[in-house]
Image (cartoon, rainbow, N blue to C red):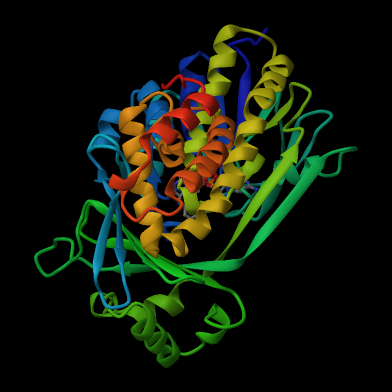
Length: 453
Ligand SMILES: Cc1cc2nc3c(=O)[nH]c(=O)nc-3n(C[C@H](O)[C@H](O)[C@H](O)COP(=O)(O)OP(=O)(O)OC[C@H]3O[C@@H](n4cnc5c(N)ncnc54)[C@H](O)[C@@H]3O)c2cc1C
C-alpha cells in the first residue's frame, strides 16, 4: 500500500507536474517538485513551446476534478471550428462539432501554468526552481540536481520519483541505460515557428475570434489561435530544408516575400513579421514512444516524458492530463506503487500510442485536406451520419476532442468509419445525395454502440 506520509518527488513544473502534485498533496502526500527553469511568475520568460494551447474534453475533465475549471473557464476562448483562408483571402468556416456545445478552447500556456503552480503551492506543494535534474540512480532513487543559479551540484534521496520533465526527460534518459528499455523517436522533417498577430487599435481581435484560423497550403501551413488579450498566437509549420523551407527564409526580404506569396491576407495583420520571425527559435517536432515507463515502484514517467506527440490534434496536454486522471484513479483504488505504475502503463500505453499516430495523421488533414472541397463535403456527411446515429457514428475528431473515448478506440473505429465514408461519398457531390439505405447497412454491420463519456 502507499503511505500518505511518503514524500513524492516530481521533476518538472510544466503543465502535468503541478496538476498531479496538487492532487497528490490533497490525498495527504508530501510533494516536492524540482524545476529547471526560474519561476515564470517572477521572471519574465518566453512562453516556451507555444503561446497558447487547444484545451478540450479530457483536459477539462482533469481540471474539473482538480476544482480548477471554473477559474480557467474565465481565461479560455471557445473556438467553434476552423476558419480556412484561401490564397485569394476567401474564408470558409468548418465547424468542429455537431453544435455549439462542441468547441475546442484556446488557453494561454503561461496562464495555465501559473494557475496550476499557484494551486499546487496552495495545497502545500513545494516547488524548487532552477534545479535541473541531471540524473537519477534508479536502484536507490538518489536524484542528481544542478542548482542553475548557484552553479552547484547536489544529491537528494527520493523514495518515489515521477518524471514530468517533458519530451527531453532526464529521468527517461536514465532509463535508456537499463536492459531491454524500448525507445523510439521520430522527428518530422517539419519545424515550427511562433509568430503573433497583434490586437487591433481598439484592443480587439482583427480576425474572427471564435475560430482556429488555418492557411492550408499543401506542404506547409500557418495557424492562429485567439488569446484573451486580443492577439492571436500563430504557428508557421514548414519543412526544415528544401523547397519552401525554413532554410530558404534566411533574410527579412525572403520572409516578407514568402508570406506575401503564400498568406497574403495575413501579412497586413503582422506589422512586425520579420523581427518576430528572426527573434523566435525554430522548433522541432517529435514522436517519442518508450516502455516500460516505470522502474519498480520507484520511478515513473508521465506526460510528454513518457509519450511526446506532434501537436496536430491539439492533444498533448489533454493526453497528459488524462494520464493524471488515470493514475489518480488507480491510486484511489489502493495498491502499492509498483502495482499502480504497472496498471497505469497497461491502461495508458495503448492509448498514448494511438493518439501519437492520430496526431501525425492529422497533420496531413490540416495542412492539405481542409482546403479540398471533397473533404469539406465528407465532413458534412460525417455530421449527418452522427445526427442520425448518435451513439454509433461519432466522427473521429469528436471521439478524440469532445469525448473521453479511449484514444485506441478512436483510432480503430476511425479507420472503419474512414472506409465507410470513402464508400458512401464515392460518386456524390452533395450531402443530400447520400445513400441512406447503404449507410444504414454499413453502420449497423460494422459499428457497435459506443459508450460516450
Ligand atoms: C508547437 C506546439 C503546440 C502545442 N499545442 C498543443 C495544443 O494545442 N494542445 C495540447 O493539448 N497540447 C499541445 N502541445 C503539447 C503540449 O505542449 C505538451 O503535451 C505539454 O506541454 C506536456 O506537458 P508536460 O508537463 O509533460 O511537459 P512540459 O510542458 O514540457 O513540462 C516539462 C517541464 O519540465 C521541466 N524540465 C525539463 N527537463 C528538466 C530537468 N532535467 N530537470 C528539471 N526540470 C526539467 C521543463 O522546464 C518544464 O517546465 C503543443 C506542443 C507544441 C510543441
